[in-house]
Length: 196
Image (cartoon, rainbow, N blue to C red; front, side, top):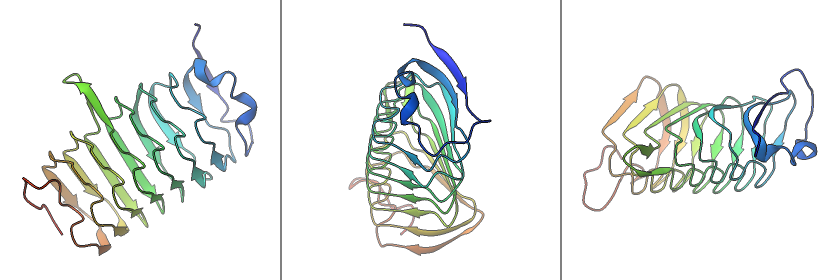
């Protein structure tokens, strides 16, 4: 199967459904201007590699939008995007997530972002910025998550937002958190709280 790069950064489009037939063959993709929604399963099991930057205009990443996209290493969300359940579930090479502007991470949006062996460790670093809301279990079972960076004024972190993330070692806060639910950082029943 041939693989391609597609740069649509000079195009304006609110809908990506017209290119869905070629998406499984892409390794690099630059989003067009004006994309409002990344439809359910649009990039599921894709060959996208490296960094994926969600444009500021994107308002919604639907359920399973990037499900099992095994070659993505970094996701940057720059705008007020709602990330629905399982949007990035099972992205086993995803090691870094930066949520920078007024995004809402729904329950299980990054669930099971972990590798299958020592070489594919999965998610290790999460950066949260201004206005971000992290719902219950947003990062559920991200076993290798070790660093959380609060780099802005985070709106809220819900109870069990980092449930079963037993390797969290550091939390760097250079901003603030308006609301933290009780138990937001309980990582598992056998470990200590980092913060609650």
